[in-house]
Amino acid sequence: MDKFKKILGKLVLCACEVAVGVVLLTNPEGFTKLTVTALGILFCVLGALSAIRYFSEDPEEAALSQELTRGLIALSLGIFLVYKSDWIVRSFMPITVFYGIAALLTGIMKLQWTVDMIRLHRGMWQTTGVAAVLSIAIAIVVFVSPFRVRDTLWTFTAIALIITGVVDGVSALLSQREPRYTIE
Image (cartoon, rainbow, N blue to C red):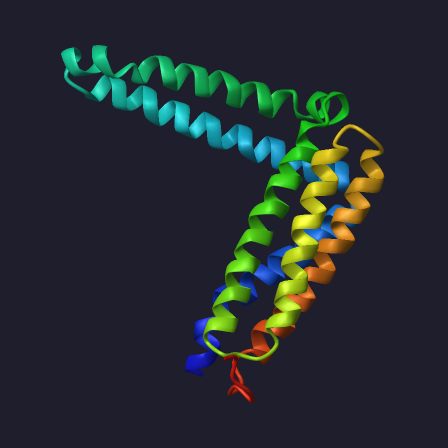
């Protein structure tokens, strides 16, 4: 049970990858609109908190902090993202770059796991390494061509997320076995 608790975070990340892949495969525009709207809500909350912080500070400190300006800018951006999410999804493809950034960060995390597994003399590090390379490859494809054929990119990204999520989950479970060999 202790071994399972140690890999629970990795398994949750793998499940999230598969879930995002499935949702992205079935409804890419809806998922992207939801992501943009959620980001807008986050900016609204952060903007409101910043404005509240401004009014709760000492007037001299508040004047130097610029919290009201930051709060109003974040709030404006948040409202724009919430109310214009459809327009953003249809008009701009930088949202695809967001997916590329997420794939790159995931690939870097998987690269860390691979190196950890090698250093800890765990088996199955190769599958995690392949998943890391696949995630980084997805990011490169997205960065090279973010404005072309968005549906193809979304489908490719969705399938890759599902595959890497499953491979990572299996790898995380199998890596908890006792090592059968040592790397020297």
